[in-house]
Length: 81
Image (cartoon, rainbow, N blue to C red; front, side, top):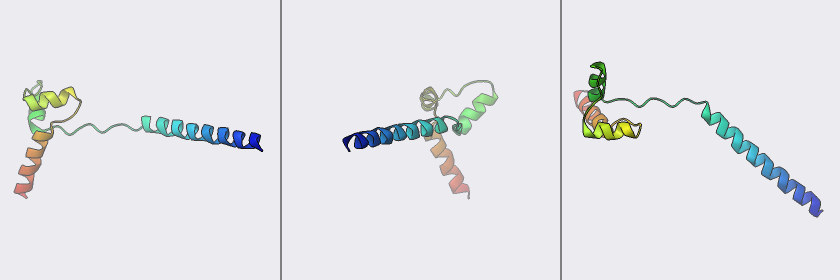
């Protein structure tokens, strides 16, 4: 009886590990969406440069878009509507 309990515990643990590995592998194939760039960064990019605003430079180092500039743009768009 103890042998059966031990075997079932090992089987359950291995099944859980396989599930975790499969879930991890499935997540790797999903491409991450590119962050939306603020207008100031898009304008600089069109000129072949990088945005020099301090907030945008800091966000770019972290691989993100500047939340401050995006929030201002969203605010402006909300007022236009």
